[in-house]
Length: 385
Ligand SMILES: Cc1cc2nc3c(=O)[nH]c(=O)nc-3n(C[C@H](O)[C@H](O)[C@H](O)COP(=O)(O)OP(=O)(O)OC[C@H]3O[C@@H](n4cnc5c(N)ncnc54)[C@H](O)[C@@H]3O)c2cc1C
Image (cartoon, rainbow, N blue to C red; front, side, top):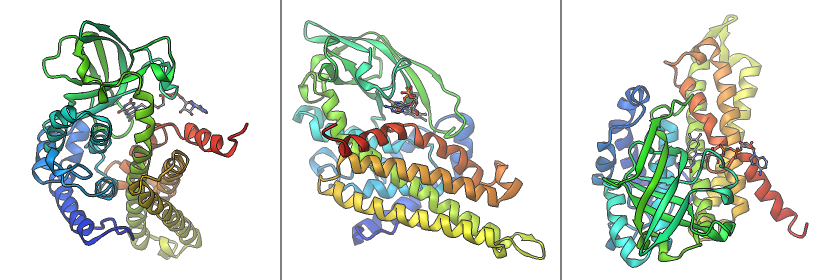
């Protein structure tokens, strides 16, 4: 089983990578096909991962974590990509624990971080709405103050972990008159929360074992102390601060899937016979695989640089955007070429390349559509324009 092997990895990272690989092999790989049919993972997976000590990276021990850098979570993302087991929405846990850790008050950190790390709090972030996705400033979900509570109304769509989450950070307008400075992040503990409803589990063309849902808020009352950082109007800034890691993490997911696609295809073309030889002996096959490997290695180098930067707090929005659009674009291109080299077998669900193909497509859309990534990059090139 291949695990991530990167220049920034210490002995501790390597040991962690072995534990992650073991965990995913035992707890995810055998169940992935069933989860795809059921539309969600077994809920106990979260607490099992908590017990195995996998979800505490980057968080101080006093809040239940084990410290360390973003590399530990990149190892999980890569391994999920490589093993073709994207059903478990654990990248959301990695993203959201950093929101709470970076911006939460002391009380919020003590209240929410231990549960997120033990797997008892299953996290989701609810930004996208039926009427707006890329244009986050246009969100219409409103939180209106009433005494020392907010009353939340609105709806969200395409929310990962939407069926299972019991800790949802909602992007809401606390001041609808203002654009980005009217946005706040409001945490909801949803167990028994009146007015909070989930839509059906959405039927997707890929990532079928990952639950994705609409969420509805109808006069949901939430204490004002649940605004992240207890600071109204800081939501947009908080999102922007955390997006670099989210985008790099998506890149490591992509890299795992790219490596798996190449490994699968190499084995396939070395064994498949055509025209009196192996598919691997045809020049087109050799050139295509050489191109795929080159793209994989170029992507790897950029992601590794991004990892060093994110750990220093120096990954710029622009470089994170480059990592996200490039890695996911390469993922889709490489997997498409690899599927082609499988011929008709590549289109059959029993071959891993087919699932890699359908699961890859959403990567160019969420975490910021790739066109939005390019716009962010262009803005830094045209700063005075
Ligand atoms: C599987 C899956 C999981 C998701 N998980 C979550 C989640 O957990 N939480 C959450 O909040 N959201 C989630 N999303 C939603 C996702 O983030 C949005 O779909 C995405 O941001 C795009 O928003 P939209 O769908 O409204 O598309 P739109 O904003 O309507 O954009 C449509 C297309 O227009 C183009 N476009 C948009 N803006 C620009 C621009 N500025 N310049 C050039 N072209 C542009 C792009 O091609 C884009 O794909 C998920 C989506 C999927 C598919």
